[in-house]
Amino acid sequence: MAKAKPADRYLHHHEKADERYGKTKAMLLTGRKIAFTRSKLSFHNAKAMLFQY
Image (tube, rainbow, N blue to C red; front, side, top):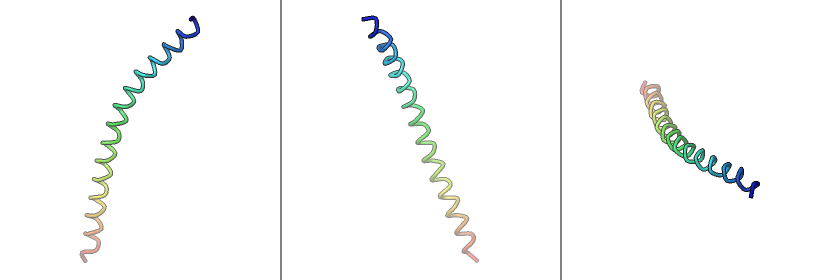
């Protein structure tokens, strides 16, 4: 029984960490997606500017 308690605490701690990590991961992914589309757009704009002349 004494051996199960640290494991439970460990599991509980990691559930909380996973929850927090999931939230930050989602935020990072959306942020990265936005940044990626932005850079893609600016890249296309720069390319269009270059090939206009």
